[in-house]
Structure formats: structure tokens, C-alpha cells
Image (cartoon, one colour):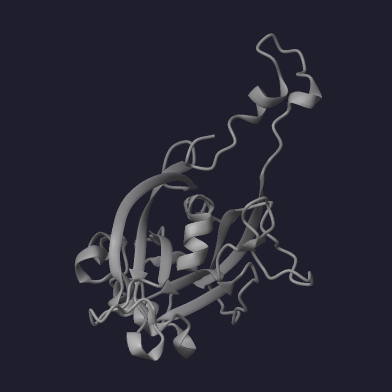
Amino acid sequence: GGEDGSQGDLTNQLFNTDGSLRDPNTVVEAKETAVNLPFYVPSVPDGISINIATDGVQPTFSAGDATTNLKASYSLPLKWNQDTTSQQPLYYDSSEGKNGVSCNRISIYSVSSPKNLDITTLEKASRVGVAKSLFMDQLPNKYFDQGVSKADLISGRTVRKPIKSSEVEGGVDEQVYYEFDLAFAPLECPDFNEGNKENLGLGFCPYDKIFLVSATVLDDEKGKSGTLMCFVIECDKAEWKMGNSDIKRVRSSFAVDRGA
């Protein structure tokens, strides 16, 4: 598997080229576990409608009459603790040399809007501001640290992934995802004299929060306004230092599909 998180073709893992079964001891173990979350979004929103899934907990939906079924998924490394009843904190990596929490929170949220929500929202995000374009400042109860609206865009890229579609022959289309790496300094920066070793009297603090984002907009197949699906993994400096390759892989594993 490359950076896209795919584990290679299962057939190749299980069978030799001559069709005989491979020695079971050589079968590659999946080193990650998938998290799948259904999202029910209003087909015809009469205002901005937002659903949030935090740390793999399915969002609560107000059952409207007309809903579109979407399915969001991502993969987590098996070595990260995913048991909320465990003594260890969530996402704790106890592998050798790590022994720490890998990230603070993983969120997926959907935003459906009656108008003007399409892929150009993401195309313009790097100019307009990622947090604003992705409605991060509009999520209820200041869901994200409000410093995110001043975050710097460290890098951005697009990737393409398959998605079910009744519009194309073969039933599978390509969906474009925009990946953004955001980093921001704390809103308040205590002075060096107040014990903040990082403010060297330069008047600013270095980045202490990093958000890795993957976002896509699904067009309503009837050509109405779309639904933004956004994945955010949040970590601090120490977590980033320890687990950034895992964190990037988790972000890249995010995918959305249309329901059955």
C-alpha cells in the first residue's frame, strides 16, 4: 500500500500468481481498523444544516422527510487505543518509543446548505480562508478552538477517490478531496517573563495546534446545492512530533460514499 492507505489487492495477498493459496503465515496483517459512520443529510435543506460525529460516535439526526444517506469512513492504526473504557486515554500509542496520545480529537461534520455550496467552495478556500470556507467558525458551541480562523495554511493538495454514482456508466465516479494542513498559535501568548519559554520576547508564540483536514463537496444528484463533508484531526505540537506520519495517514484515509 502506498500513501493512500490501501493495503494492496487482497487477492494478491491471499493467492500466489499460479492460483495456489499462499502460506497463511505470509499473509499481510491489516495494521489498521476502519471506522464507518452513516450520515443522513437533508435532501432539500431550508437553512444551513450541520451534523457532527466526534471520535467515531455517530451524530444524532433529526429525522426529516427527505434525507440523503451518506457514509463516511476513515482508518486508525491498531496501535492507537480506541477503547473508551480503557485506563489509557483515547488514541494513546503504547508502541515502543512512543507512549503518548497521538491526537486530541477526530471529527467528521457535514454541512448542507440551500445554495452556493459546491466544489468551488473548496477551490477558493486557500484564498478566502480555510476555516471560514469550511464553516469551522459556524459549528455550534464554538466546537473548534476559535483560533482556527487565524490559522496559517501550511500546505494544501487535492486527491481523487472513487464514489458511487448513478450518473456515470459503471456506477463509480471520481470524487475530489481537498487536503489542508492548518497550524495556529494560541490566541493569547504569555510573556517570557511569565514563564512561557517559547515566547522569546519576539511578540509571538510558535504554532501549538495543528489541524489536518480533508474536505469534499457532494453534489446533489438532482443538481441542487451540495453537502460539504469535512474530516479534521486535531493535535498539539508534542503529538505532531511523535505521530505525524500516522496522523497524515489517518487524514488521507477519509472517504465518503453514497448510501445504498
